[in-house]
Length: 210
Image (tube, rainbow, N blue to C red; front, side, top):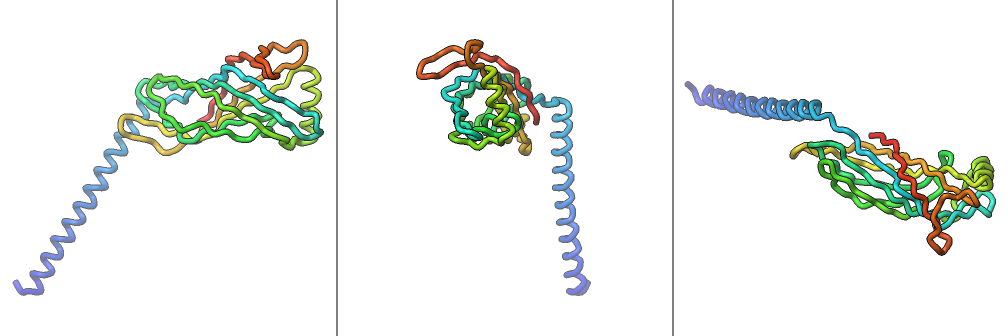
């Protein structure tokens, strides 16, 4: 065998070796991915449940036309219903809306991990100072407040990941919607706490989208 033929022979063997290594890695990755997908399909992760426990209103001032100043403390509980799947809450922002319009600033909830069947409770403050309100919404807000009953939504938007064993999924969007009836005047069912603060015990189940 000539030197040239020997060189081509060794080059061919090296090429075959790299090709085997490449396909070995591809097959291994495929098996791992298939295993994860099968486990995922068997476990079928359930989305967390959220309950709005209470809302404390420290301020709700709509005396300036088309502007609202408000301050709330909301108590939210979250439960992971899964037996073998954990949940990473990587980013959570809570805020209040009225008739699909945001009327407070966003408040961040610190990232956390929720184990199997665990429950967490958060009590963030959300507020807004002279937040513009659309004129047609402000008319409805004034009427609702005069009638003594204002419906707002406490919302949470964020990103979550699922943890199955050592596998952690990609990010999924989390959208939580919690209705809260705030009552005013003689028919108010709130508990006065002093300094014009009123606490409303709600225990309201929220809708959750993931």
